[in-house]
Length: 509
Image 1 (cartoon, one colour):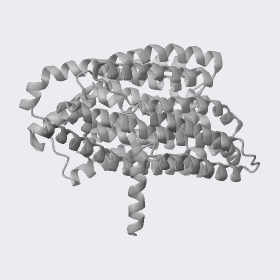
Image 2 (tube, helix red, strand yellow):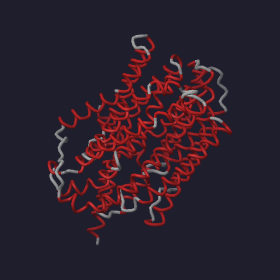
Image 3 (cartoon, one colour):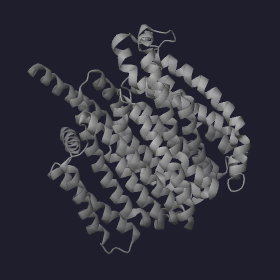
Image 4 (cartoon, one colour):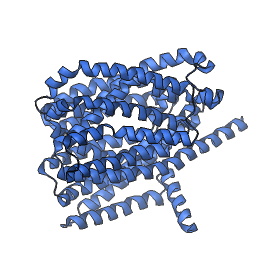
């Protein structure tokens, strides 16, 4: 008994060590990417027609939907079952990624057929206020194709415990290429058609780089021959894939309906304004992206080994860490957003997104607080909850987005998103607590919230007229008060350990 407990504790430490060490590196990489993306976003917001920018966001929304439809659930299936292949087969005989490639190819052919069939509907819906969508409609195909296969290879890389480079490509290289294309458009080297054509192949460049990386790492090894593991797990995989595939489609449509509805009803320019607010708030989610990507194979192995203690440890600590980061970044955004807009002298249309930022920021905090409940369910035998929660989110998001958008404009769409995320995560968190006793709650999170609110109130009422000084002083004061309190009272174990790690490395130098 004691031996089993010792093994469980050791496994927990190893799991959290993998997640913490890789998430620190990948979060750093992701912040670099968002810094470049922020520069790009501010630059193009000031100098490029919002309708053009709205078109690129429309491409991204459609590509996400095409991915959900075209991968036929195979990517999630690979994440769920890959530990079995890793334990039972040598790399050269693992056929699950070969199945992913085959299913993605079949799915994309069906999606391509659907693209042609939906052409007339798109013309009717977007031809009035979003004419660029009609002009460049078929360039959605190469953009979506390369996005689909990049995401498939990205997840394959995660299952080799190689997360840093694909995250670098997705978060940094993607934004560098986008910045280069934007600059070439602004200075006149590219005209609009050549810019859109170039943009539609941007994921192809990243896909090629990822394939070369996996090949050089000797990880690009898999089989197309059906293995004994696949034959043994076939029934489970088909059942798992069926419902989760439908749930993924519901979830991705719910996650992109805001942009599609705004672009159709108010135009591509307002679609980009909403995306501008969304991008700013997405900065809050940066640690979540890294932690989720790295935790998927660890959680899958924990479920396979029936190590509930490890899952609870990952769940609670990741939630505490992400909530701490979320409060820090959200408060800094609220304190400084308007001053930054004034400094950049952005067109007046962008000021409409300030209240949207405040609302969407709350949604991001909820998502961060929910921790890793999505991969916990997705890698478990209770993945049906993933389906039902996605259906519930879909049923809430679609009507509320359209209704609230017509009632209150962009703010209404933001409120609809907050409500849908609350429904989505409440179902998941409630199930995990009732079924396994898993929960992300800790009293430290309440202390983090109160600390953030106190520091925010101090900074909010600082009378600073100069915009540059306002950003500098409020950022320093809030960060000093908040981070100092978190470290002094050890409100987040991972944050404290990360700070100690940095201090040790600095002392060595």
